[in-house]
Every structure is written in structure tokens, then in C-alpha cells.
Image (cartoon, rainbow, N blue to C red; front, side, top):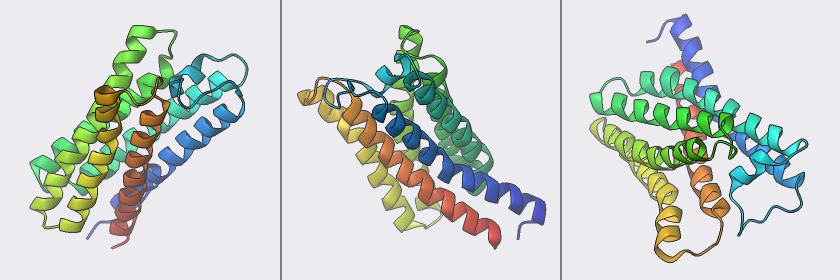
Length: 201
């Protein structure tokens, strides 16, 4: 049984897991709407971050702010929710590292080419890896359905990139970025909701 203070912190952490992807994709879609030259097959989403006018600032704001929210979700929500096992803690910290990379993507746009690329690779590599680790933690806690859901999410997050490098099905990376990001987002929203419910017990 959590005391009221800890329960409140956990509820707020769960809420940030829900809000982070909603904010990110809202800003991404608004940025795309503000830039008619964007191509899903030829561009990267991060190309929006260096467009003049409202497009670039809106995109970058959405990415780094959602990264900050997701970092809070990882450290104050996931880490607490998974603290019963060392594997769970490692998974939560790996997810936190992915959110730090997401913040870096927004702060260091494509004008900082090498740094931006490093943060982008880190995010899309660490996110699915963290899900596979967390899935193992759920197995240890006999949460089989949640483990299966997490593994499938990790596969969906990684598969677009595996196919991209294997068969190069598009010129740009906007599609694999979006599919991978949406998969992680659905998982974060689901876990955020579960953490909020857990805090009410």
C-alpha cells in the first residue's frame, strides 16, 4: 500500500507517460501540416527541425519537451513500478537513456549533424532494447500478457529499421521513424495508464 504522497507522485509519473507521446506526435503532425514540401518517402522527420518559420521550432519543442516528460515517466514511474527486480530497474534505466536521447534529438537538430545523428541512433536502438529487458522483468513477475505485449512492441519498434537496412524500401527514414515511434508510444500510454491504476490501490 502506497502512502498518499508516493501514490500522487506515481500517478503524475504515469500521466507523463501518456502525455509525452501525445505531445510529440501532435507537434510532429502540426509541423508536417505547416510544411507542404515534406515527403514521407524522401525525408526524415528531423528534416522538419531545420525548416524556417514555425515548423522547426514547433517540431523541436515537441521532441525535447516530450523527451523530458518521458524521462520523468521512466525514472519516477517505470523505475518505481519495476523496482522489485534488478532486471526491471535496468530496463527502466535503459528506457530513461532512450528518453535522454530523444531530448538530444530536439535540442541538437540537424544543424548539429554528427551530434544529432548520434542521438537519433541512440534513441531508436535503446528504445526497443529497453522493451525487451522490461519484458523479461514482467516474466519474472508472472505478468505474462504484459510481457508478450512488451516483446511484440519491441519487435514492431525494431522491425522497420531492420527492413530499412535490409531492403531499403524507402529513400528517407520518416516511415521507419514513425512506425517505431508509434509502437513505443502505444506501449508508453498503456504502461502510463497501468501505473496510474496501480497508484490508486
